[in-house]
Image 1 (cartoon, helix red, strand yellow):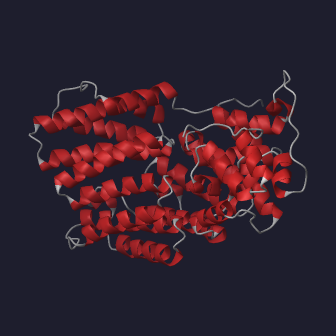
Image 2 (cartoon, helix red, strand yellow):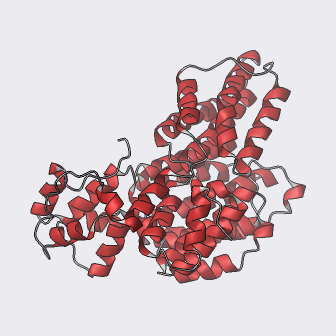
Image 3 (cartoon, helix red, strand yellow):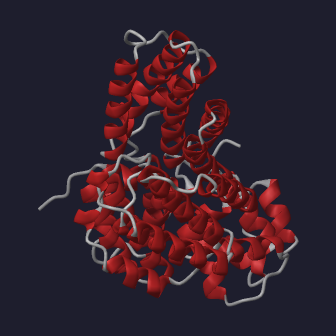
Length: 438
């Protein structure tokens, strides 16, 4: 479904209001925006299970404050919320005027404008990626292994630095070169490993900016090539990327099984070297986060604790060359995500506060630390700390705030609900790319 602003006076919305179907209205509004349950939960500060319970209950219980937070995240007008709850009559149909409803509400208009402003990745750039997934362009260089590795390292550097626009501009050429190199090498196992790695990187980036339909295509191709390679490490990397797509599709249980199966395959190697152990630690982190997103608390905490034990036995990253760079700091970062996903905001903040951002290897990871802290603060009901955490993320990696739909949802909610809170005005200006006046 193409994301769009819900039309609250549409016949479909009015059906939910007339039936006093609060859960149905919230689910409809979420789908209209193109959000998954995790996106709404993040914007409102609740777990996926809470969103699911709310949406599947015709007349949910609970306090009005909880419903208001979901309504604010979805920009449901106060009169519409009151009507569906039965506190007021149905919203009156407005006579058409030259002034739109959003212009009548400056705070709401600000939040809506914010969603459209500041994106670093333009539609034409993503369209060219879509076209390349249908028909590959010619390779930008001779299809040698050296050229492919050089292009891959450049793409990885752009992604790690948050250079999403340039990354996607160069992605079609990278994929074309990877395919050409595989053909040139006679489709040997290592060429399939490299092909899968290119598609894994594409999947991670496409998911980050919310282009999920393309991410599903790249994830499927990565799975195919990693299986052809016969490498359990390549298969684990593909499973990790695939799990991101599955979570965004609302298929948390499937994502959990995919990552568990991949982790078991890596473990079955006996972990003979640091590369295998590092990949296993990474997969445990991914399994933990996936379990937390599915509200499986015991499994999530067990897996993240196992990851801590595995990484403690690894040497420094300089002494090994694994498919993933896994350190105690990166595992701790995953733990922050696990904890806020489980609704334990206070412990998430405590854990994240102990991480030195300088120990994280890339701007993307440092930005992720601050956005995860923002999610935890937001879940805890602390708008000022949320704003300052997002400002810190923007300083490290602007694209982590500007391009991720869930994070932009929090910024929009801050702008709508807490426009005068310290840091919010500066944050909104930063996300929209508007320089502030001194």
